[in-house]
Image (cartoon, rainbow, N blue to C red; front, side, top):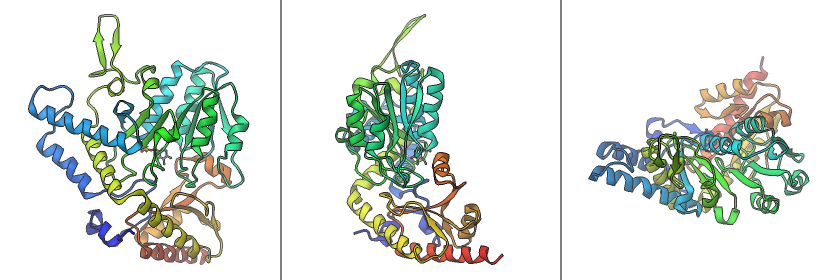
Length: 401
Ligand SMILES: Cc1ncc(COP(=O)(O)O)c(C=O)c1O
């Protein structure tokens, strides 16, 4: 059971913004004080580089950075060698798609979907253009979900890459990635999973899912912005060309060629996001302490409670009542979502309005934009009530014209 009053004490923003009704965690979560403290402590007491210096401060910074890698690898059941710290999901997915420009050939196929965030779609669109490979879309079902059957209908001997979202940021639908991965592997295709929305809400086990690469971001899971993770199976990573070249990633350098270290350092050229990695590890410890079962029970209950209340509002279109993640995506009659969101802000309610960097979802729904309310552990039933009241007030206001 989550005690929201107790949880809010861990999030300093609530003492500074006591009226805050934050329902935009799918965009970025609020930040935990222990994460902020760890980052502050690194800068206050160390602040030096990792993997380079032969002095105490450098050893300690390196220890903390590598300890962070271990925390991440345990979190998703990977090996330390399989965890690369990046700038975030976007950079992780660009790194992989960029690397596959050296591998894909004309006629090869990349399976993707209309549910993808632009970070999971555009890098592959550009890689397809560069290589002559073809993007193939899984037909979504009526609700907007990726089904295993639909995946199978586009899978072929030409499939080389399957790049999919685990949980849609726009609709919160969960992809059955384990079943899809099994089928993809039978065709010897690699599976790249965008876990930006699932990592903050559910246990991810890369051994169980068996995906080949996976990406997620720190800022959506109580951690800092500017840091993310690229997981890759060790054997695959060491076959890939590095994405960037520079300090600490080369093994031997000659005048006309160089050799590369193995993963993960092979893919962490230059000074890495040291404080970010340390902060992300603390965010993971915080999540582990709360536990995904409690996180899910609480946020799912809020989602169901809010959906029930919203079902009494006339003229409301809800696009994802069955979503696994605690996300409610909706529109009110013909009122523009940005107008509604601006009005909700008058009531201190923060929601997202727009295309959510997933324009193909809106095209699928046949709308130009939507509103999205998303929940996390610091949200209360009072937040849900205030949100619903503000939606009704906004609706009445705009319908009065
Ligand atoms: C499903 C999904 N993929 C990728 C991203 C991109 O993450 P970031 O902006 O942290 O790189 C997001 C962020 O909203 C997302 O929701």
